[in-house]
Image (cartoon, rainbow, N blue to C red; front, side, top):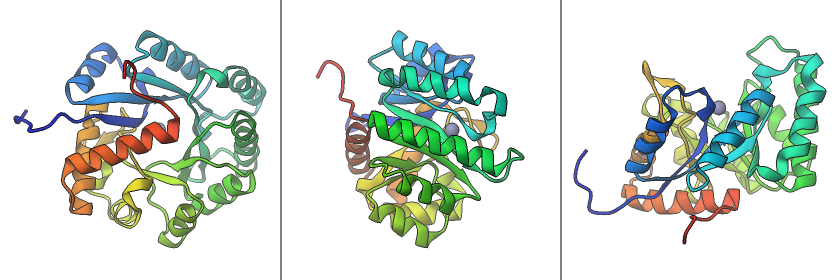
Length: 255
Ligand SMILES: [Zn+2]
């Protein structure tokens, strides 16, 4: 790594840590790369349990979010997943990953029902939400708005530009991933969103251009956002880390 004139503090606002076989090493590498916080997102009961444990094991670095991902929804498991989140949400910094995905075969009606119930839990517990949407941006946005959610991040936003304006006008955030290296719609969204509405993330362990990501790759996201915004990376780091602290209502341990 090149010598750095300053020490970065970055937050990876979206990682599936429970899917990593090399977790201790990945966390160590993240710390060495300047990552000071990771939001570990859950997908279902089993992954939520793991996320809570990982965060308990490294509370200075990892913050848990409890979710029920649209890919995981099965009619017969809905009740148990919702109750788990309802019972344990006090231990999490956010609800996520939740949302709508119209590219998959799970019925839209079922996805919509589950999503709205999760948004109700977020509203009652006053937690921010981390939203996944694919071919469903407008629908997801309308639900979030209808449920009067105050704090939402539209993760890896690559949706329509006019909808982005509405998302921003509601005070919501979007997040940037390493896909900025190659994805024009994602680049366009990040170019348009003001820096104080952007969170950085990796969506670890998603593969970008054949390479599996890890939380340290939030550095890639940082560099790409800095290029698009024509700003020095340290300025982008300072603002987006402040955004993440504010959005998830966390603070640096020991400070
Ligand atoms: Zn994800």
